[in-house]
Image: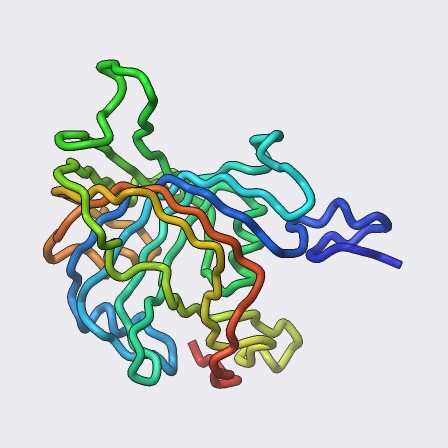
Length: 268
């Protein structure tokens, strides 16, 4: 009998790209709140969601991961990855949620876990300024005046540049955030004559537990999104940048909420 949570399924089941949940995460995040053109943002929302406001957030995160039974962080190449996430402010049946139109990672394991949850993950290269526990000209202070940068490149093209200068502690996370994030789990058909029909097309909601957040630093920010020959992220360019943030957080994922099935056909 073949075993494993994801492909490839093998006799012992240890070759699966992603192990079965729970999945435990901890990360350092740099985030930028900004405004976009509301008409452009609304065009990215799937059936069942409505735009709540023109507020968006970009998250640049350096993650470390572990499964329940293994200590993957002792083999860092299995455990560590970088991610850039774009979130839109939305509503589902009148309740505030967030929606992710774009997300990039640099590890195949993360990509697989994300697709299972409905995150529309693609491969990309994210870099983030690090902070260390020693004073140095090479080390930004995690406090007033500390400066941090982040970049995203996709298919060898620079797509985003962001910089944050910390000013003060705050009790508020960036908005929108991951709480009540809604995704679309989508898998297309390949059978001839059914290419317009999805094998899986459903609206789902993130369900995390054991969430912890460090002190949250807030400050000034600037961010630029560059043109790309086919990726449509430039449609969500900032019309105004509101604020920047730096914080750490941890969470566990082992569940998902099914909200509704979507249309069987996607004529796009």
